Length: 260
Image (tube, rainbow, N blue to C red):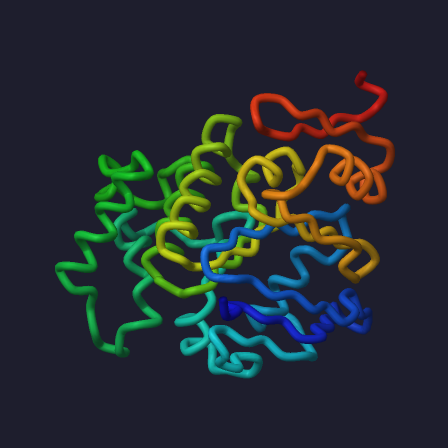
C-alpha cells in the first residue's frame, strides 16, 4: 500500500531554537496515528510546521505530491488542521462556520453548492448539532465549537487530517464521541490522521499507531493491532516514568505504579 503522508527529515524551529530534529514518518490510507510526548516535546510544533505556521526544513509529501512550500490554499486541499482551541469568531451561523471548510475548493467569488450545504448539515446532524445550524457560532459552548471545527475539517475533504489536542475542551463523554467520529471517518473514507493527545489512554483506545516524541526526535512507534501490555509498559515508562499498563475488555489502560 502506498503512503498517503510522508515526512522526510523534518526539522522545525521556534524562534532561534530548533525543536524537532530530523523527523521521518509515514502514514497509510485509513491510518489514525497519535503523537504522544511530554510538554515541550514538539508535538504541536510538528503540526504547526507541517501547516506552514513555523519555519520548517525537510520534505512533506501527500499522495506523492510535494507540498512543503505549496501556497496556503493548495496545501489546504491536501492537509486540514484542527487546532486545540477554537479561534473562529462569532458573527456567523454554525452552518456557515462548517461551510468554510469548502473554501479551499471554491473560487474567490464562488459560494457552496446546495449539495455541499446538505453535506454540512448532515455532518452537523451526526455530531448532534443539527438544531444549532442557524444560531450564531459565538454563542456555542467551547466543546460545541470544537465539534463544529471538526465538522469544518471533515467537509474540507483533505486526505490528511492534522489535529492538535482537539479534545481538550470536551468532557469525558464528548471526548470519546469526538475521537470515535474522527477514527470512523478516517477508516471509512480512507484518509489518514495525525493527532496530538495528552492522555495515552485515549490514544490507545482509538488510534492505530502511537508515535512517542522525546527531545525533538521519535523515541518509539507502537502498532496497536500487535501491541502487548509489556511492550506498551516498557515504551511508555521511558516517556512518562514508572507506569503499569493493564489489559481489560480488549483495551489497554495506563496507570502510574503509585496508583496500584
